[in-house]
Length: 324
Ligand SMILES: O=P(O)(O)OC[C@H]1O[C@@H](O)[C@H](O)[C@@H](O)[C@@H]1O
Image (tube, rainbow, N blue to C red):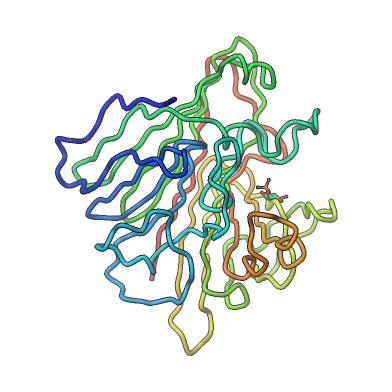
């Protein structure tokens, strides 16, 4: 095993079923607290399920079920994240759905296209350095990745990447990077969240109106006028800092809206991605009709790199909250 738990929570009885399970050879943290239930793979510090305990009794007819569905005490219809029903859980393969982490580069490597898309963090094993519950019952999890000879070959910087995950009524994911080298470190990165929708035709993303964006499909710049609705493939990077958005699904007047607030800090861009029909079919771990119930809204520092000076750090955050 490539992970250790340095501090566990056995003295915290409010946490009901926290342990490390191994799912298809991949260590996974299952956390159940009075506020929520979550599943996190140590590979990639990858959250694959987040179910807040809501007072709302709203039902949806989504198909997605978390990987580990032992819990009877949570309404799994309240899942916030999309996970591909045909995702592959194989060491070294990025899991399709949930919240992959793109680090230390977003998209293609700037100089060497043979290196893995979206960097190596999402397929690397993280170490659990701390799990604790605070007085408000939020569970704080710190997972860490540091440089080793294999990272040094493709990324010539000593670093400490800590993924801070806070599980409460909201889900918060932060990427905290320390540049332990003696030279400035350029970095592009993203918290690549896949959100579960009832129906893409009935959904909109608000909060990026008036922003310019890079259309990655045509490599052109444009400006967003109305809220974003999706009727075809979309792959854009919106230029906005500290974006605050609302993802509204079930917009039909006869139904009750489901509203997610997405709040980001230290982002310089927000990526919005939906592969639509042709690209869904081309991906082996993505169902043909998967595009219909998902959208990625990603807190990013991309396409322009940020620069972290020697011995300095940087933290990118995305927090998601069900509002209705
Ligand atoms: O298939 P991957 O490597 O997980 O990437 C999925 C998508 O991730 C998005 O962030 C990119 O903007 C898209 O261009 C890309 O297709």
